[in-house]
Length: 359
Ligand code: SAH
Ligand code: SF4
Image 1 (cartoon, rainbow, N blue to C red):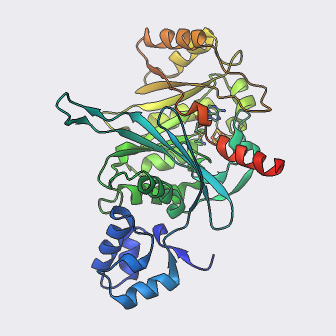
Image 2: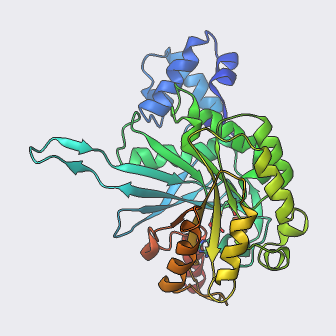
Image 3: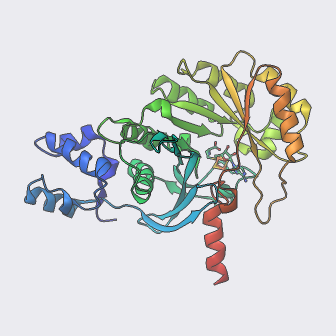
């Protein structure tokens, strides 16, 4: 790409490049609060500055290819990058807007946006569709944050509205640590998206060394671990990364991770029928998480064409949950939001590819 992505720059970086430095604040305001998509619109900047910026930078690094609406209000986006690769992001409606009887607003909608950090993924989990396409490249910080800006703009979500972010789209965020950390900073900049770090969650397949490194940065971010199995043998079959970083190393890294007083580390447990859904696994999970401020999120395996894995029954999910909660462990079952639009990440991109090859 000939032009650089202006959203790759933190406010401090922008201020060091553009003089006088208060212009950086103005530019940030145009991008993140007014959702500008051209420098031309930035009328309080001198014309020469706008023209110069336009020759060096782009403001529109992503192109929306498709949007799918789910009956539960979730919306799934497929974005094209400058080099033709595609990534997904999902707007999840966590709670509807509600009104008092007199028509005044009781509370606004609650949104969470699920974003991608890489094109593809190197980790190669057996159950994951993103892994099937292999790894292409890391996203830049601006390509990560831009997913949210495009979604906010498209849905007319006011810049000041609170949104939660989960790095649970395509890719392994800790395998792209530098750009992901930069994106966290741009998200949390009061003059950028102003999303507090405790509203951002990084989900990882368990790169223990990187979890330790992230912890030392003291960003205040939430951590989610994709555990999915409680013994190394099974975890290794499902997640080859377990050879390099076994369960014990993950538990140690989590114990060293700074957790916000009001938060818990989330352990994601993808439940696959007849693979990891029996009560003996729940038992082991309980002892594994002993002494950790943890919560468990059980996820229904979301099947796709060609997979040998199956979705568990509702009854088995509830039994698993009941076992844990009755013993004092926080445990939720992830609502299958956007199931009708295959919102488990990687699945929309795959549909599009199939469409192309069938055409
Ligand atoms: N690479 C990171 C973040 C992206 S994956 C990680 O693995 O944590 C986000 C979540 O989606 C992970 O917990 C992953 O296990 C889950 N996932 C992958 N394939 C899925 C499927 N077919 N159905 C349901 N969840 C899936
Ligand atoms: Fe990568 Fe996460 Fe998919 Fe595993 S589950 S292949 S780590 S995106």
